[in-house]
Image (cartoon, rainbow, N blue to C red; front, side):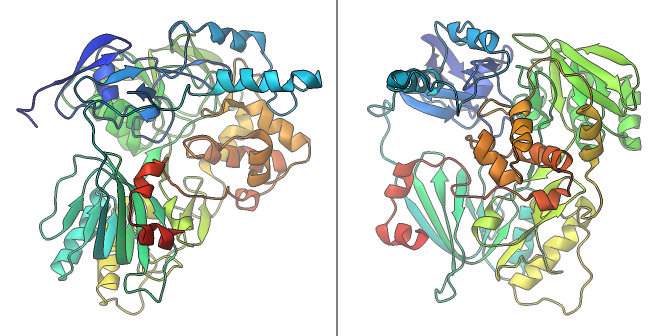
Length: 554
């Protein structure tokens, strides 16, 4: 890649170059965090939030195709790139006045009902305001239809992180040639294993015991072509992601996760922010400090701060604010700082900064497990659902295993987990083994007490519960006051969790809030139904696959 030429594309008519291997978003972010989107209902400015292809903060229109995740798209020569919303521009959007005209929000279910004869007109206007523009027409310049790929393997390992690679290496040493599937495009191969780079697995069907290869995984590759993998066993090592946090104006440009901060700033390159406020107190904060220590203005934690994080911050002269409530992000077009309060009724104070990096809570990418029929259980340690596992790392579905963050296995036990899973897959499992050390299952979630205290404070600004659908916290509260109980029912009433991220960023926080509002344990509040695809998948990618393959998936 080092000698590859740069690629020139046109963004809103302006010629821009992308370096070899650089994503479209990274190319647009070199000179600062760009505003690429306007929110669905209020047309609030939105900038990249997750940086790993999970949210909707970097959607762009590429060669006429809407909703392209620019953080995962590698631009080609003469690509035509535009923003999906915003007139006359995404930065100065006339429809941004909706945010001011409707300070209490727009009721999407009962508004625009009278007079009845005007309903068809209302529908046309609303579709125009909240849509992503016209459907794609024609094909991208210089592109061809990708060739679908079908593979068969003894074992398919989803995820090429540390845990996934550890399992692959051990399987190879046991005489098994696994298929390693990775969503990123830059994973390195493991000797003795097959590597499938740039593949997003969107479907994991329940096993068919009468088949020679009972598991089937469906998805698409970086070129948009359909892929299918048949396997006797599947190991899910899909890792995790940095969570969102609920506070006033939490959708402002500059509020982003640690995933985004690191993915948008390659090592040894200057950052687009100068004074970042990092939220969190665990090891993830230490990762941020090691990468951006000279650009961090302060560390703010909802709870206590780990001693190693205290030590790393002190070495760099970074002030620490443990046990602090994050009340509101300041700034309109982008973040200018945070308003905070010491927990327990302490004083209010403010910090100046041009970025808010969320590194307080690492959640599992566990969406594939329910698709295959695996049972899930609530773990209070991180406030998330994880698969039930036996001591060998197998879920309640025979032949489906989990390792790493997606399994809730503690980092100190990663090596042991990889050994156990590999032995079980290879038929060498020992008899009685102690359970694997995992995220704490019992007791209250760490953020539950934090949110109890935060909800008692006066609120300023919009508290966005769901970024994808512009659902406000007050709408979730209104649903509970109306008598709706349980996360699935409240989701249907308020529409949170129905956006393109499929609830990855809103559902974990709303679960804790509903537990508080309904006065019952979070596990009783339930969880939303996980439906395929795990990632938004081009229908054409699946249509190109062999009909027998797609019929089995159905």
